[in-house]
Length: 534
Image (cartoon, rainbow, N blue to C red):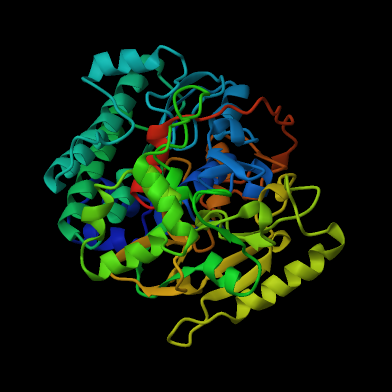
C-alpha cells in the first residue's frame, strides 16, 4: 500500500495530545513522532456530513453540494448521501489513473459510485448499507464475524454502549485488513466515527473517551503493521470541545422580529424533532398514521396556547420531562408542538447544522413570500439584526454574520442558507426549535470546534515541513501528490508542503446522476438521538 489515510472524527489537539503524552496511544504517537503534525483547519460548517465530503473531494461545499446532514427540496428534506455529493472522491480520481483503493466507514459514501476497489460506507448510510461490490457486506461479515454501521440500540447501558463502541472499532480494523488482503490496494482510507460519538453521548466522561481512543489506537496499529503503507496520514474533519455559553433559539429570535410565523396543532411544516423518528416508512412510502385520541386532544389544547413547549418547561422544572416524554405518543407531542410555518415565514433557520438563515424567496421556494426585488434589502436587514444579538452576559452570540458568497463559491450556492452565522468561539449552541425563550445556559455540553488535527509520516513525507496552515480541503490534493498525481484545477485545497507539489491540471467534469433517497427511518432516529436532528 502506497498511502494510508486514517480519519478520526471530531478530534482536536487538546483531546489527543494528553492521551498521547499519557502513553495511551502508542501507535498514533508513532506516526506523530516519525513525521510531522499540526492543527487542521476545518470548514464552515464543521460537521461530519459536509466536512468529510470536503476532505475526500478537495472542494468547498458550494462545489460539492452538501452543507448539512440534510438536503432540501423546497421545504421537504432527506438525509444526505453520496448521490448529493457532486464531485469526484479521491479514490475515484485514483481509479481513473490506474490505482486501486479500499474505503472503510467513510461518511456520506452510500450509495457508492463504481471504482477499482472496495467500499463499505459509514455514517448516515442506510442500514444495511449499499456496498461496492454489491456482495461485499456478506463476505466481510462472514470473514470477520459480523459488521455493523451503527451501535445496536439494544445496548442501552453505559457499559453496553461502550462495549458496542469497542466492537464497532474492532470491526473497522478487521474489515480493512481483510479487504487489504483481498484487493491488495494502492490506497486505503479507514474512518473511525466513535471518537466523535462518545463526546455526544457521554460528555465529560473521561473514562469512556479513553476506552474509545485506546480501542482506535489498537486498530490503527494493527492496520499499519499488516499493510506496511509507505505513507500514513491521520486527519480529523473537525475538533470537539465543551461549550460553556448558551443555547440560542434562532427561530424564536426571528419570530420576535417578525420574520418567522409559527403554527400550532400540527399545521404547517412540523419541527424536525417531532418527525425525526417517524418521517418515513420503508422504501418510498411515507407513514400515514391515524392520529391517536391523545394527539387530537393535544392539538385542540395547542390552539388555545397549551403547547408542548409550555408543558415541557413545566415538566422540566419538576424533573419529569424525560419520564413523561417516554410515555406520551410521539404524534401527541407533535400535534401540540408550536412549529415554524416555513411557507408563511419571511426567513428562518431550517437546520442548525448548516449555520444559516434561509430567506423564503419567491420563485425559489415553493411558496416564497419575499419578492426578488427585496432580497438584498431583507438579507442586509437580517445580517444587521443577527450581528446585534447578545447573550444574557452581554457577549455577542456570533463572531461573524456573512453572506453565503463570503463563505462558499461554486454551482450549488442556491442550495445553502442566504445568511451564514459563525458562533463566537464556537461556544454557543444554536437551536431551531421554538421554545418561547431565547436562551438557556449550557451544562456539560460538547459540540464541534473548527480546528482538527493532521499528522503524516512516510517515504514521500518531508518530516521537517510545517503544517501550520493546513486546511481540510488540502487532504485530497496531498494524497494525490503522494502518488505523483496533480490536483484538479477545481479543487480549493492545495498540496501541503510535506509532499512534493505536482501542480494542477483539468480533470474530467463530474457527471451528476439522479438523486437517491435515503428513506431510512433508523438513520434519522440516530441523528436525532445525538442531537443532529432537533
